[in-house]
Amino acid sequence: MKAAVWYGARDVRVTEREMTPPGPDEVLLAVAYCGICGSDLHEYADGPHSVPVGEAHPASGARAPLVLGHEFCGTVTAVGPSVRGLAAGDRVAVEPHYRCGACPRCRAGEYNICRHFGFAGLMGHGGLAEYATVPSYMAHRLPDEVPLEQAALFEPASVALHALRRGGEADSVAVVGLGPVGLLTVLLAARRGVRRIVAADVHPARLGLAARLGATEVVDARDAKEGDAGLRVRAACGGEGADVAFEAVGSQAALDTCLAATRRGGRTVLVGLGRRVSFDSSALVDNEHAIVASVGYRDTYPELIRLVGMEGLDLRPVVTSVIALDDVVRDGFSSLLDGGDQIKILVSPSAPARASDLAPTSREHTPTAPARAPASDSASREHTPAAPADAGREGDSR
Image 1 (tube, rainbow, N blue to C red):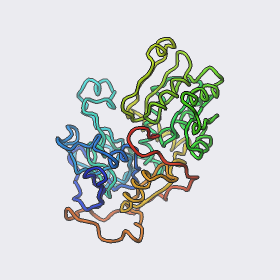
Image 2 (cartoon, helix red, strand yellow):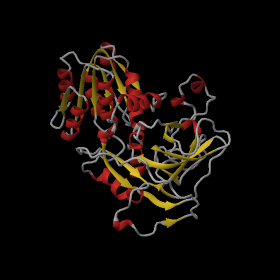
Image 3 (cartoon, rainbow, N blue to C red):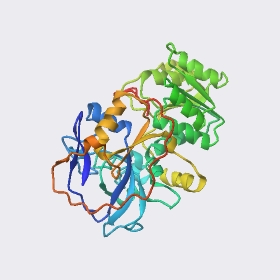
Image 4 (cartoon, helix red, strand yellow):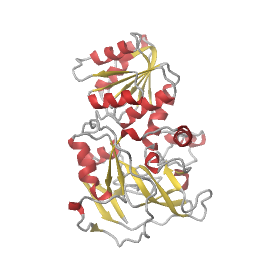
């Protein structure tokens, strides 16, 4: 089978690999779509960050070279002998969290902070491939009403949904940073009935999309002086400040904006992938302001399946391109790093490669994959493009 394999920073190769048959509790699926996440981009640009290189990851048993991609879905082609409730032909969304099921956090139902925390596609082989083998607990069967191109967005939408849950009840929220996760936070906050949603970013096109997704006010921070962006967001929240602010960038400036934008007794939720940040602890105490972190998600896929399948939620406005697996480096990773009009790029192994890319791919193994079933879902709809996230690990809008 063909797969996009991480060997090192700036070294992802689309190559032929052996397909892994499912073990007793695993399923094999033909991948329909796989999104490129900011985490994938970080691994490509200057990794490793999460990819295990020296020792294998304890949950997956894998290490580099490793197949990337954790935002994926597809159709089951085979199941292991111990698998129940899934069969060949089922369409599934993959919830790529590894979990041991035995550590204290898993026993408490908090599997997203399992002792052996990890993701298929970062700490184990993932979905930027024609086929993927995953533990059966990762596969959520989809009703006919949920198209596969929507299911490929359940992973970033789950990050947004879990962050909203971590934020708690709110009448007003601020979302700072409008990458895919920030935009989906706006969309889901509106769906949850939040009365005032203020979205802040430096890209006008993303601000326009946020308004279409449900933001009641937008703040263009391009010309904001130090500390000014937070005051603008606070003003947009009626002067009192937001009940909850979501930091979806991973930078000091975004955190400062959130803290300045949030009311006394409010909460800032850290969603972005940053490094070290600092804050004024006296101001935090004086305002009884809480800072909480949000990592991954848990128990989100059933709600998203219901919202999309039964209530008509459409996650696809954040998708700006669908590309072929052969083109993932040039039209995926490089395009996102170089700038342009991309927000969320989906990779479809069944999509035709660009004519210039039709030369034979390198081969590491003799391919053993069976003939791939044709995709049953149409390509993603076209949407108004918006600006990309900046390159680099710190400061990316998620």
